[in-house]
Amino acid sequence: ISESNVDFAYSFLGLHPFLMLISSIFLGSIGTIFRKIGGYDFTKFHGICLYVSTVIMMYATYVVWNLKEQERLNHFSSFHAKLGTLVIAVHLFTSTASMYGLHPDFGSFKHSKFIALLHRYLGRAVIGLTWLACISGFFNLQSPPVETSAATIAYSLIEYGFVAGLAFHAIKVLI
Image (tube, rainbow, N blue to C red):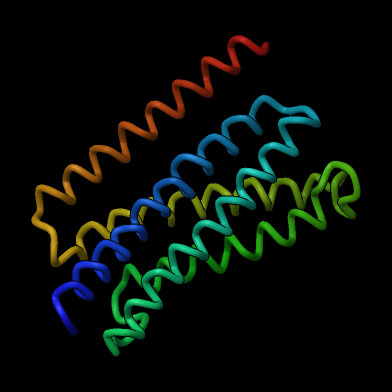
C-alpha cells in the first residue's frame, strides 16, 4: 500500500470513534434524557434520536469493516470488536422492535407495562455495554499514542457532561 493510501485509510478509520461518540454519547444521551421528560413529542424525539444513532453506528462499523477488508485483517479479533457487534445487534433489535411495538401512534405493545420495563432495562444495559465498548476501543489503539486516547476519553466525558447539562437545563425550562 502506498503512503497516501495508508494516510487515507487511517484518516478514514478516524471516522469510526468520532461517529461512535456522536451516535452513542451525543444522540443516545439526548434521546434518553429527553425521554425522561415524558409526553408524546419527547417519546417520538427519543425514538428518532436512537434510530439515527443506530444508523450512524452501522456506518461507523462499515468504516472499520471496509478498512479490515482492504488490509486483509481478521474481523472480530478483539474484545472491542465482539462487544461492539453485540451492542450494534442489540441496538438494531431494540430500535426495530420498539418502532413497531412501542411507537406512541401505532405500537402494538404501547400500553404494555412489561414491554416498557423490558425496553427500559435493556436500554440501560446497552448504555453500559456501549461505554464498555468505547473504553475497550481506547485500549485497543495501536497507532496513536496513549495521550491521544486519553484526550479522546476526556473529550467524550466532557461531551457527555455538556449534553447532560444541556438536557437538564432544557428539562428545567420545559417543566
